[in-house]
Length: 172
Length: 277
Image (cartoon, rainbow over all chains, first blue to last red; front, side, top):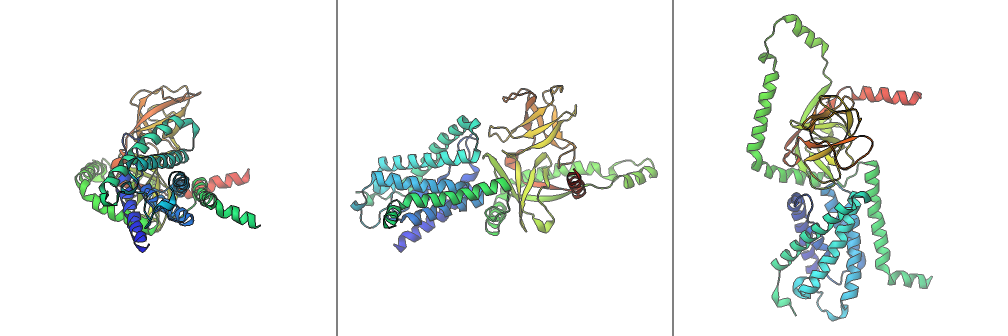
């Protein structure tokens, strides 16, 4: 239990640093901007209580907001992401089948499940984030383009980082 | 009552979602509509200091470019020195001294955080209220107009960059003095802006300079960019044109905060006028 807290705390700090000091400066053709920090919310253990999950997502969003000068924007998107995460996991995973607090990582859940999970959740988060930021229907086509391209970029980075920390012995 | 409790615990995820989502939205909407000073931005101690530190590291990478621009600016300023003019009479010098009272002052500040690739971009600079910087002051750099100050703390200030969806400055065509509004278009391109609401009588030319007008918070005649496309996409009853920005926002290092010494007097007078009506 305490190990899970330390691991997630380290992941929180690492992802915030990577997002704010590296990825914030990266965009492809003004269209595709990666938001890798949501990986933190995706990788929280299955057993996380809902209250903690929402609170931590909210906190993560606010931290990113503080660096991006957009109070509330990322927090809103992250809370939505946490809700979609609960729905997705309750539909696709039987909770009884797991022992010693597994996390929804690539090495435990397999590629197909993790890819779908990351893709759908990222799509929700980005769709909400970009539309809330722009807040205009007149630019909807351009915004949707940015959503799709950014999702591809983010999911790509997620898979790369998941493969970097891949541990084959955990696989069942 | 018991059933209600059971209902709430059964769908606790949904209710928690509503609570957190609403609170996040409140923060978002409040900040956006009133631009309230809030601690969740890069002027606060923690984020501001972190940005300052990382920026200090990044400085070394662009030393030569900064050097270059400073040298160019030095040369330009040297040209304006009194000693580089030939004084033909003492009387003239006296007149220039008494006629011109300085209205604008410039404070140099260093950019410690910057973005160009979002719909609303902000710049953080390393000076704040300790250096007498206030909300609403204009910010320029040697290439042109950068934005305006929207948030100040003791040691830092946040600038709303020209690359922001709410940007709207009064601007004019340099040669014909036709006035319009300068905005950042709907395309997220850090090199393009739009000059809109120019009267139909105007005859702009490609490559004509777009500068700040007399009724903006900047001194008149500061450069925004050059007209690059006479017919921008959004139509309407007035002329809209695309402007190629003169400032390369991704490379901003040093900026100048414009202090208008007469701003208070002007604002006070205008407020009084409104009261009288």
